[in-house]
Image (cartoon, rainbow, N blue to C red; front, side, top):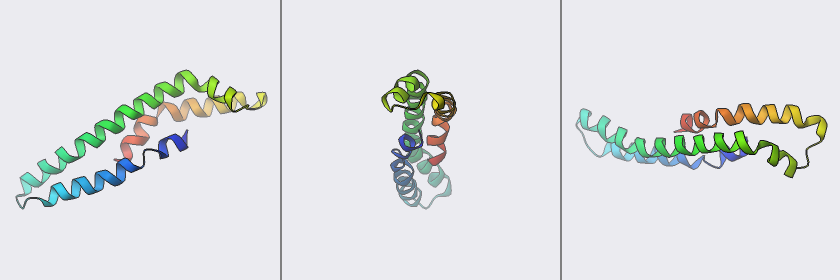
Length: 98
């Protein structure tokens, strides 16, 4: 689950550049805030949508993923529990990076 979230680490790096360029594009403080907010809204929206989709994916496909990885039957319960919990907060994990 964590590796899937790390695939989206480009969002935080790209957002930093976008927001800083937008913030520095004007000298008026009120315009700086507005420009930064506009620049950050698209990456935040993408991260929330992707996070919700990941959460849904984990909710419905965890048993199939574990079966495909040939997880030992003794570990199915704890592994499923971990993936369900991590998957349920995937949207927040992605959004906090932006």
